[in-house]
Length: 512
Image (cartoon, rainbow, N blue to C red; front, side, top):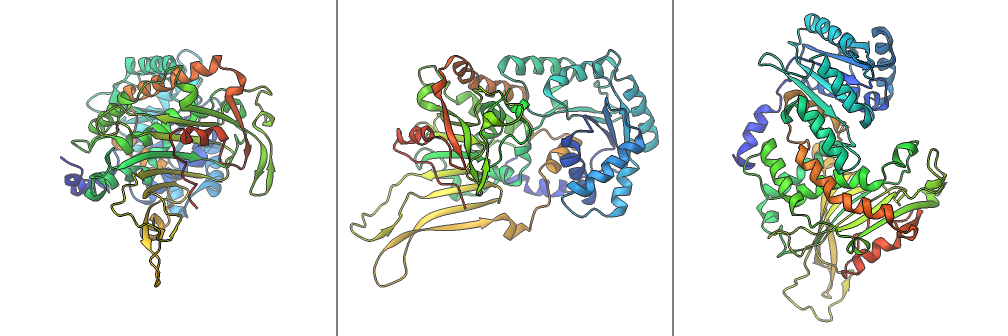
């Protein structure tokens, strides 16, 4: 079944209600739960996509009572809800919120959770289906999995299912990612494991495949015959925002490139899947990851740039340097900016450079994919006046404003024949209205119905780490001057511009 042929099927499943189940959130007292998970669940409930037989158990060391947990969530939802929540809906949620003290550092630490799951199963008729969400630091995941295994809570049968959601970062390098996969796959099937990447919950990211494969006008030119280069940018104006301790052990390459940007790269460059299902799409992504040219020590200085923000101004407000942020080492060599050149060795993309960049404390917040077409004009217009005439570009805007922009040359009205570039700008909000989703709705819903399409497979994750591992190891032994300092409020270090200048190209300016 092709993507086009699945439209009717997808529409028929649009209102599919999830199976009865209990959602167990490890780390339920943390920011992720109150800011994203509970608001997303409320939005699903408002659209009647949650089962009537549903419950949420917050599992952690805090030891809150059910009433304390309910009171805390009630206070938090008033702050973090993305849309107006009807009192009746919230009361429905409150009646299904439970808390249990779970010490996953101790043997048999999930026995109390097992008892509570049985109680909730009887009260809410959840049939024993359970979804375990790891909203905890990554180092805690193996311990929780071990405790769940001891309590026989991961094994599923023909009568009920069990699933695990793992938040990023999924590992710290190739070895740790491989070890975590081995731990999980010893006790669960791949179809039970959902490695979550919140970028894939964004409507504009999901639209990349539809845009490409449902529109022959673009797919027919989506190759090295017509495309000169591709640029994928994820820029942030914020700094580490109180996450200095976490960030100083990870950096931009681990935090953004090997997951978010590689996923966008794969969706932009992969072949059309034979079927629009999880295995077909993830296999197409894996083929792209396998085709990325490996980085060698001799290549890295010319193809990868790392930077770190210094003091500067954002929106006329003075901001401090990265090394002055709380919980950051004063001599930190961690990168807050990365730009790199990617080459894909296959027939479609041979010779087309793909440039990725991400950074904090840049001039604005923007995530976008720029497709720059080759400048193969059929006519020489000679001395005709032009205004900033540039190659045609197609910009897929991911955030903050989702949309698509096509830039092309056109005649300027008047008696004199002259040209300038026009932008045909399509904003999703103009067609579909303002989105009230936070991105987790789609991902949580897919977990509840068992659809793995938007989640990374084990080999996807390990291959991605294998691509960036040589860069991480090179940086460990590199001289300090390979870390380029850039002022906050700029577009990044000058070395990132030179990365493209060596190929006689330039970065596309951030979209307005």
